[in-house]
Image 1 (cartoon, rainbow, N blue to C red):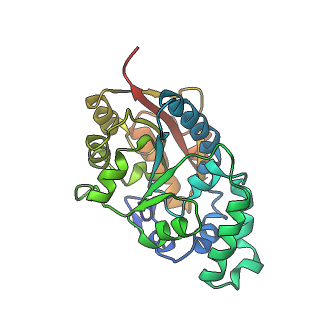
Image 2: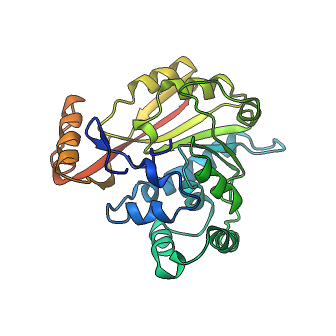
Length: 280
């Protein structure tokens, strides 16, 4: 979660760089400044996939008073929610938050500008989005500017959902994940699915350096069948240095993958998994 959006400072755990320091800031400017040189791009690739999944999931609840909400796990500053529900691109967000004009603003000034910016670009087909991340500053900013309809900082790796999160999970029909597969485990998804009240789907982009199998097993135990898009991989970001590149190569090979042309070229790649009820 915090630090899970792409992998700070210069601390390297297990060979993969961490960016914990950019998730505890009061606004997303440091996040975008740090990730821009690394060409972090997985939210861009996830945008059309999540949008289609949200449309298909909502169709199941046609006729109900309220449509299903989407829960973005490891949501940080609400990047996926911004792209899903607004006419904005990831490139535009990079330009906005790294521009010199935005560096001199206070957080309050930036938040006021962002609230207006996203409101003007709100799509008519926007869906309710809840955000889950242990970084309180990140989710609070996303909530303040209108990207999230509800925000939660529960650490489900070490505890159960709060009563407030449990109530919210009754409305969730789709869980999304980009980048957080390196940091959250089956414990988080077990906690979420145990409190679900609607049929829940999941759409996840997971680095090829980690195994998603334990989470797939958790979904199966809750009646969900997971499929893997074998047609392609999705570029995530550049490796920070040679040490991280070597880590990525070794990790992919250890899981039976081929890093040629991907991690060997110095860029992390992700796989896309969809989990849906195992019914005809």
